[in-house]
Amino acid sequence: MKKLVAGLLGAAAFMMGGGVMGGAAARAETVRMTVSFYSAATGPYFEKMAAEFHAANPTIDVKIDVVNWSSLLQKLQTDISGGANPDLSIIGTRWLLDFVRDDVAEPLDGYMDKSFRDRFIGPFLRPGQIDGKTFGLPIAASARAMYYNKDMLTKAGFPDGPTSWDDVVAAAEKIKAAGGAGFGLQGKGTEVDVYYYYSLWTHGGEAIGPDARAAFASPAGVKALTLYKSMLDRGLTQDGPTNYTREDLQNLFKQGRVGMMITAPFLINQIAKEAPNLQYGIVPVPKGTTSATYAVTDSVVMFKNSKVKPAAFKFLDFLFTKEPRIAFTKGEGFLPTTVAEAADPYFTENARLKVFTDLLPNARFAPTVTGWEDTAKAVTDALQSVYLGSAQPEPALRAAAEKANQSLGK
Image: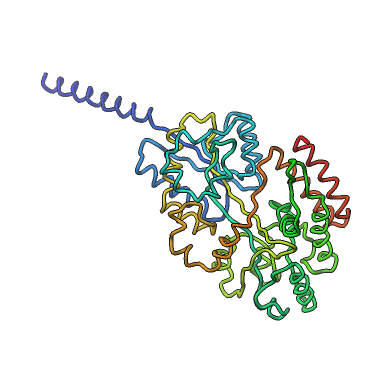
């Protein structure tokens, strides 16, 4: 009888324990986060952060899905339409207005207190704010500058790099005469349109005017594209720009096969790992009539249909603390978006990164207007037609502006 009672008590205890444990399992939450592929370090970083967070918060699991940039927007749109989207995702901040317009992005202000807001560097937090509400947090930030091969530019007479577009043309001519490619011109993939804006903005033009209409077909815009076409026609760029993505150009630069190109700070890390003997410098985007550069943030958004919003924001809170931010920004080669990481010696004592941070007062962000992605595509199509020789700058830009205005609702 004693054995029977002990057995019954043990079974009861087991069931009660199972019940408690089962209750905990039932209460466990899974946060799904989609992250964009930046480099081979991206997936391991977020998996490590998910594991560290789970160790401190055992009732919350975080599942990471890494998606290439080229397919990220389409995948998110498809998942959203099917109700299968993640709880959190990294997005291009330029997509944010459309997400807000479609009422799929969750406002984050109710989850943030003052101390959380104060973590961020103001200019990088603002692109994620629309109509006074915060919908995106800046997970990645960068600006653009001109990289130049010191050996090639020294032989061309510009040992300290170009300062104007006239310098770029003059140096490219000398590099061509020596059998090299002077200026790397991007004509494929993400940010083909942005590569044009460097010339557009520095020649005094605008992508979108004060009336929210397309403004890139202006005389300044035509001059900016004519400059690129002239360099292409004269053999001052690499052959076939429409075959080269940003990554392809960066590879040419790392291989010492192109004298100058414009890109983001993350190329610094790539050169250190893949071409440590390359002698190079970094200078601002060349001037036309003025100085300008492109600054960009990628944002983390929470989707409105998430069923685990408090848990999802708790993971965001963790990601935006000092150590996780420093690890991510250093690893990927971005600019800091929070005050704490910006104070780290890696950033304060890095002369090459300082070139980028010094450009921020003259930086432009992608316009926060509905239809911007379609506008960017219209510009890209126009550029590619010019680079392929099937159109001239002025009519190509005019046609693109008409398409853009339809997308912009103008």
